[in-house]
Image (tube, rainbow, N blue to C red; front, side, top):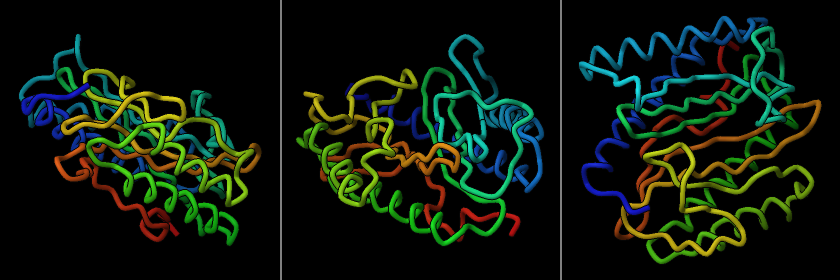
Length: 239
């Protein structure tokens, strides 16, 4: 679970490409477009990586950018269908990749039309939950405690029935690995572990709200390896 300096460098590079993949997918997203029209982002990113890296080993690489259109963004474990259409409401874009053996992920909730007041309030609550998670990150921190702090905040805000998963997980050689940032986990954070922070709020019939970042635990806290904006103004496109 603790990564070497070389592994951290490889994951840092993957995180850069993860951000770029989501930028490409969101750049193709427009009100009324079908999800299949945003899939070109996968081939565009693959071409960019090959140009910059000189190679992309197919045995230890996987490139995927996908968009969960509202209201299906409330079902994060449902695979997007090509005919899903971008409409009003919260969409969730995911960039999930493994570049020459090392993984990273970036997720953002975004809108292709101006969000409603209710959507704005829920979005901002989700962002605050992420901030609480980030603030708890440091060597020696209990993964149980990090998740518990985030989930207790969301429960106190009235979203106890809108939670589907833990706050985060390890990432690096695989897409999901230890340490598990989850209530009940006995893992303790240490310098050079790499995790995701991705609290989510989900409403069937309306949509989901989730950002995810790839984060490095440092000697005195954390470093965000992914670098896309979190605020709702930046995540409202084409409006």
